[in-house]
Image: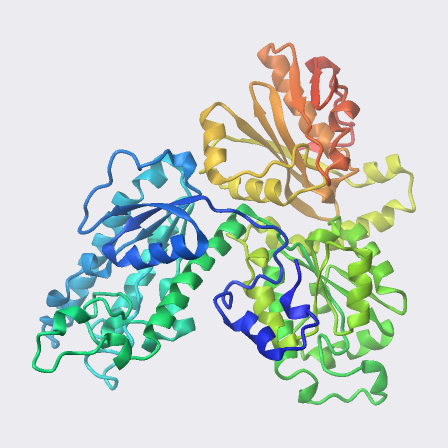
Length: 615
């Protein structure tokens, strides 16, 4: 797919339109493959009907709609089997949480009455969620819940205290906080931030609280104009009094749908970015360091978008995305001037790998990929030079390149679904440190025999079982399975729903954590086992070559011996990327062909004695 931010289009208007339209909040620049959505289940009030019509007409999405108001219960089953739905959307009408008459008649001098109403509304939200999330709780169905539009101004006046429950704006903000908090307590449920989308577009052309009651919480439209035609002076449609509202509502509906699709892509981990590689001169800062002999840099060197990019890289690192430098420069001079250039906004240790030299950037990237064990498909390369970008794309056709238009960089990198995460695990937050330790480890390996090197690692392993999606290690296991391509025996992607079904049918995740004298690598391998059939084996390449896989297969074999099982079976499904995993079972003592493997437990190779186990 062509990256619109890096295209050669000479039409600036066209380029800007691609970045300020309905994809503004969910850029498509990093998208490589499509993720189809076939049918959704929508549970909500009549206010959602216009949105559903746009979804059907504009995106050709099938949906089933269940009207709910005032705590009406769900039917026993939805119109179609649960497996037919990609996800569900729940919209709680604000009017069902509290009625406008209740709020508007409270005694302003009696703050306790507002606090009591808020407590009552909070309980209603919790109870309403319990009702509407019944199918999610019973079947683990992926579900998104919309929040409430925050009123544009306090009805009591703009000079009244802002952070006070008597201010309706603050009241609804607090209710949105309750909604988010309660959603976070449930599995496979996420917030669709209607309010923030409205803010991105512009509230004045969207929200109907400038005309209708505050708790209606809908969009301005022409729907009620026919009711006002018998007045002495009949009213023109709402869109003539508030120009642009129909266009704005169309943008809102499309943008909200694309936000849903973006979150769906992130949760399913489609086209995820694992590594961002940046140039330095005129990319991370303005100007060329080699041309500044005095080493004096003013605020113009990094003010504006360079600071924005530096901060962006810090946030990506927190998400678990690795950072690297590939720059044609004098390394000693860059190291000397680094703090002056970036002003403490980025640390050199934030980068997992640094290639600062006069060699080809293509050659440097090959070494970077080798160091961090990712494929070019998972990489974003940022460089101001179109020649360098073209050379990188020619050498690595699947790499994603940016850098021609720095005004778009921050939003693309932070807002694209491909750089998002559903949660930040302990392992992902420490990924940079683990890769740095891996590089030190590999450097030491080159000076020793393979056996002596492995013995020197002081390798320690813990193997535990995961039997439920409620296990605190399940999110990391899911992340590992869905992000790992090379050492993944089948390449299959899993969701919370499919994991819950696997466990309910007697399956178990055998999870392995690894540490050595260099680093604690955390949970780095998972074997999906059911009735002593290994459906999938996934391992991070960070521990490749350490014989760790033998420890996990050996533990499964030991369990089979205790259980009196005569044979363990396994499967391999070749993909374009999993060459490293195809001989896993052959090397462990299994026999077989065409992806089907079997072994007697006693024939499976056990781990070498230098591997120690801990509990």
